[in-house]
Length: 78
Image (cartoon, rainbow, N blue to C red):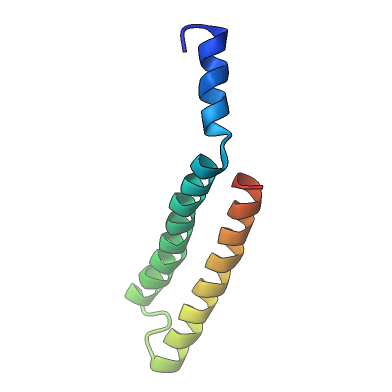
């Protein structure tokens, strides 16, 4: 990247679909991990410890993860 041509070449590689898809997969994992981690932290302090509230918390974390993953897909891949 010591020249404008080298920078353009690197930029072309990172604008490729495969690289953007791999980045999205990585970000999707981080988003899922974030929301499920928040759910576990809340459970550690006593929120949603019972079976039904735990299922509700898991459903909410999955829905929020799905929304975040779709948003990341639109932002990164498209």
